[in-house]
Amino acid sequence: MSSAIRIYTFPLSGHGHRVELFANLIGVNHECITVDLPNGEHKKEPFLKLNPAGKIPAIEDGSVVLADSNAILVYLARKYAPDWIPADIVGEAQVQRFLSLAANEIANGPAAARLTTVFGAQLDAERAKSIAKYAFDILESHLSGRAWLVGEKPSIADVAIYTYTAHAPEGNVSLDPYPNIRAFLARVEALPGFVPMQATKVGLAA
Image 1: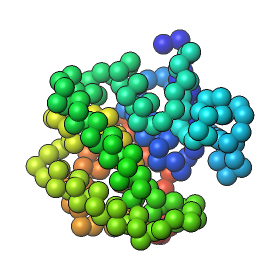
Image 2: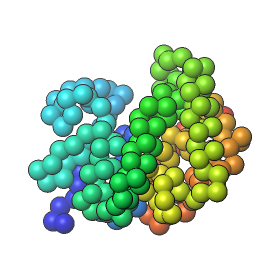
Image 3: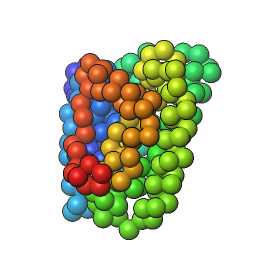
Image 4: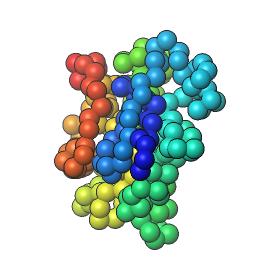
C-alpha cells in the first residue's frame, strides 16, 4: 500500500479505539489523527466533510472516506484481512449479531455509563448500568465453553465488543461477576499487535 490509512479518532473514544485496534491487529499501514473533541472540532469543517454526522471515527483510505466504527471494521476486513470475517453465511450473520450488540446494548450500556463518569454526560447512569448487565449476561452465557464470539478464531465481532466491555469499570460497571468475559478480554489483549485504549481512573477504576 503506497500511503497510510488515516484514522480520525480521539484517545478516550472506544469507537475510535476499535478501529485503531483492528488496524494494529491486521498490520495495515495507518496513522491516527486526533480530533479535538473537547473544542468541537468534530462538529466543524473540514471534519464534517469526512462525516456529516459529526462523529468519530472516520477514515480516509485513498479515495475512500468512511465513517461509523462497525462499518469501518467490515471495510478493513473485507479489503485487507478477510480471515476476520467468516466466509460462510451463518458465520457472517453471527458476526453481524455482535456488531448490532455493540451498536445497541454495548453503546447504550457500558459505553453510556462511562460517558457519565469520564465526560460528565447528562445521561441516566442507572439505566445504562442496567443495560450493561443485560448485555454482559448475554455475553457471559455465550462465552461459556468458547474462546471467541464467533467460530474458532478471532473476528471483527471480538474487536467491536472489546473496548467498551474492557473499560466498563470506568462507568461503575463491575466485571467481577463475569469470569468468561474477563477471560475473553485477556485473550484479545494477548493477540499480536494489541494496543490498549487510554485508561481513565474514574468509577470502579479509580
